[in-house]
Amino acid sequence: MSGNRSGNSPGNDSKALLARLNRLHPKKIDLSLGRVERLLARLGNPQQALPPVVHIAGTNGKGSTLAFLRAMTEAAGASVHCYTSPHLVRFHERIRLAGSLIGEDHLAALLAECEAANGDSPITFFEITTAMAFLAFSRCPADLLLLETGLGGRLDATNMVDPVLTVITPISVDHQQFLGDSLPGIAAEKAGIIKSGRPVLIGPQPDEVMAVLEDIAAQRGASVYRTGRDWHFREGHNDGSSSQLMWQADNQLLADYPAGCAEISAAVLPALSLSGLFQKQNAALALACLPLLQNTVAAGGDVADIDISEAVQGLAQAEWPARMQRIGEGALRDILPAEADLWLDGGHNPAGGRALRKALADQDDDRMLYVIVGMMGGKDAAGFLDPLFPLVQWLCAVPIAGEDGAMAPDDLAGQAQTLGYAPSRAGSVEEALQRIARSGDPAPRVLVCGSLHLAGEFLAKNQTPIM
Image (cartoon, rainbow, N blue to C red; front, side, top):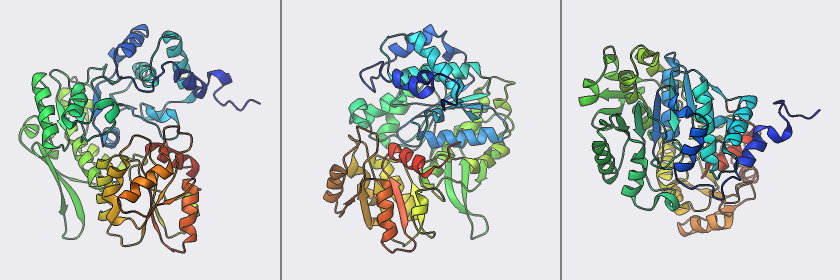
């Protein structure tokens, strides 16, 4: 028995196909639209046969905002496609067809079709797999496609669509080798997804970023809706004790509501399963999309008939792995004492470090904090770790298995040491957890962080399912 559950020959299962596609271009990232445009034409331009698209760009919060949008629209009865990257454990996580992760046989067949259509033409892994995703989405009926950019926006392979609206989450410095060190320059690249005449919703931004985004939107005749002006959110107290998230629409967003949406002009949101102030920002941004989504989708479509009150309650169901994810069980979790708290986060830039510090501080937990960190090379490790320094009592640098571009633990520990840490080193997350378990602390608070690649390794070894 071969053990190949898909029924494909071993050379044509998705793992083998993805490995071959990864060799079609000498660079992992080479920002351009020409190659993906060529392949899409050979495939019959499936990007022109998609359901209504919401296109999301930004540095932090893209995936979480998408997760909130998905939870709300599905709670209201819509059928939703999703495209995200990177994956954590399996490539299949990137493509969700009408609510379900793509199956192995389906994925392998589509990859083989794209491989044949492309031939030996140079194309990056992300470009050919994005074209494959468009092919999958075009052939499966749905009410909505939520599309996350991979890197940047203007030259990102996803930027081949005509969305009904675009969303830009907080922008900060990251991927400098591709997008540059200038915040306004990075903002201009992210703003490349803004389309003529299509509304754009903008999350919290530095002033210099907001200025660039609004200028490009004006040039393209795109209506701008922004947090702090067109909607607000705040913590409130319903009965003097329980804290609730209050959302309020203002000005033009309120004026642009279609009939029947007025019930969310002011709303009390349900408790979110995703932790941290930044997730509340993301939820508020996602909620602001709903009335405009109803207003811009063709009349008579299911998305245009979303029950807003049902959608709002769906916020509580949003899940997004490795974003301040509490790990309650699993092979790695079982290493620690029963009273331990174990958290996982894939944040990896200075803005992610600041968000983590806020989330940890909001826990109001005075137990000792142990941090296990692994990062990819080229990342600003010091910028990520510096905000965490006041909260961390023990920090351990670890490698990321199977990633040639990962930062060596000695290099990571060296950057931590310049900040005042007295870092330890371990050969794996498992080894670091075992040290914590042997420390005698009966209820340690542990955070594993620094990279989505490390988070994926953790989830796989912990045997945490991603559905």
